[in-house]
Amino acid sequence: MGSVFPIPEPPDQTHLPWYASNRSLPAYRFVPGLYPHPTRDPKGHSYNTGRLSSPLNWSPEQWETLEIYLQGVDLFNRFYFWEAHESWEGLWIRHAPEAEPAQFIQGLIQITAMLLKLHIRERNSAEKLWKAASVQLKPFHGKKWMGIEVNRFLKEMTVYLLPFGRGECPILGLETPRIQLD
Image 1 (cartoon, rainbow, N blue to C red):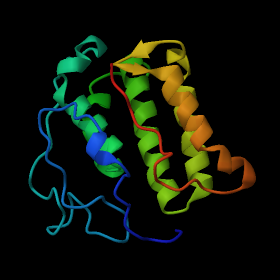
Image 2: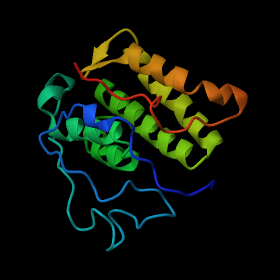
Image 3: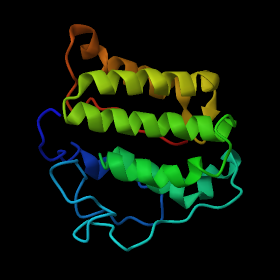
Image 4: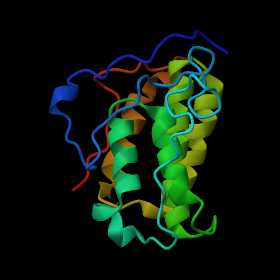
């Protein structure tokens, strides 16, 4: 594993929109090896709190009222990558892996995992996750899916990841893409 240090506060987060009705954030942004595991360790920020449950039968058209999805977006935009992944995983498991909703959510989950790997400077793992996310999200090119202009988001992510071509890892900051819902 690379360097282990806290994930920074996102720059200019006072201007970030909130999408979910729950605007509380965990006590820390989980980084493996730095903080207690959020759900397995009694000192973890989400130990024994349960997770926001996802509806058994949800559809992408419900995104505007799908609290667990919106909360994941809010967490992602504020650099709570592990926590966003956990939020979205509850949605992902409700559909067959080959179903479009599962593919889309899995692509988002892989991007959150990639950003956490970038933060701990595991470039090879991050690159693999980016390639996997690109494959998962390919069917959504040219579409607006669950409020996300997929092409715009992937283009922003591609530009952000240009340092991969130089064998480097981008750093979390102002250039890190955010999810815009509309």
